[in-house]
Image (cartoon, rainbow, N blue to C red; front, side):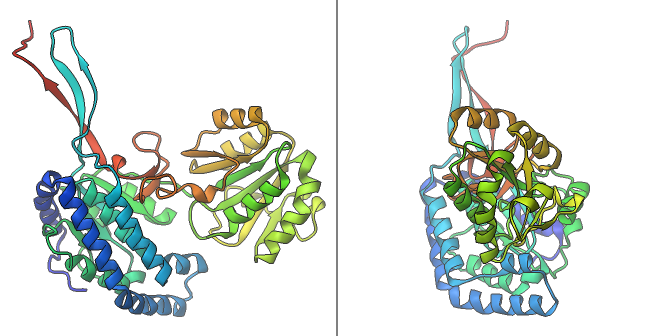
Length: 415
């Protein structure tokens, strides 16, 4: 991939130049651009697969761990999902220009808020080529210019994606910039440059820490995804097994995969033997405390530092607890605030869990893998935020806008 703009000031200036144009585009024009982008992704599938095959082969030769390889990998199905995700964003209501909460003051003037684009967004991420088009589509629909800086492990794939974006006719120059990760615009130089309105990092702890420490602009981030599921004594055990297996094995390398299972003591002996067998059939190594080991064969001892570990692999930590309160205490101590779930048939148990557990998403009788922008009806997501101020949880179109006050008067003055 050739990068015509090589310095961060030039890259950011191009994005800032595109931002006013994007902010003024009609919904129909934005949707047309997104439809063209989805078509270009489908048309570019052969070149994407060739480029990605080379990136994956190079990563395997370097001994890259399985979780990162899975994030890097593109398949025909994932490319189709990428294109379909862009299409879904086009179908979503446009948040830009929406007016909310208008009230009439005693002097007759009307006061409200209007949604407007943020401006220029920088997304920095590792592997995850699918992030590229999700971010591009969401930023475009929300009227933002976006700078996408992926990792060097996806260099060839990013080049092919950059060619796809370039092929979209009518896209304002600088609106979507996919940078060459081996180009001159390094991560630190971009983070320290002026002109970025928001930075979104997607990756491991080291990357997120680097971004938070170096960025001049606000950073929306999520911590490690240590997701818990608590199986209550009033749970449907068949449902519990199905949910645990899905949450752990459907795609273990992502942040909303299950990492720790907490089982209410009265049903541990009933649930765990069959569940452990089902997990082991799918290649999962189960590490547990003494009571989990006693309840089912095949559970290996868990070290003390297992609790709170993000495996991103086919490994699950299991602990038996005496009550929901003990499960809540465990989550408070070891959770990272991304997603927690309870399995129960008792309404009171569900209500207590929903009220007491403070994470970006709390689920009742559902897999943590469902904590995702597309699954929540956002079309796609640009990330899952665990910040307590600002957007929290899966971030879609609305989260990529801000508001400004608007006042409709008829000659009012301040006395």
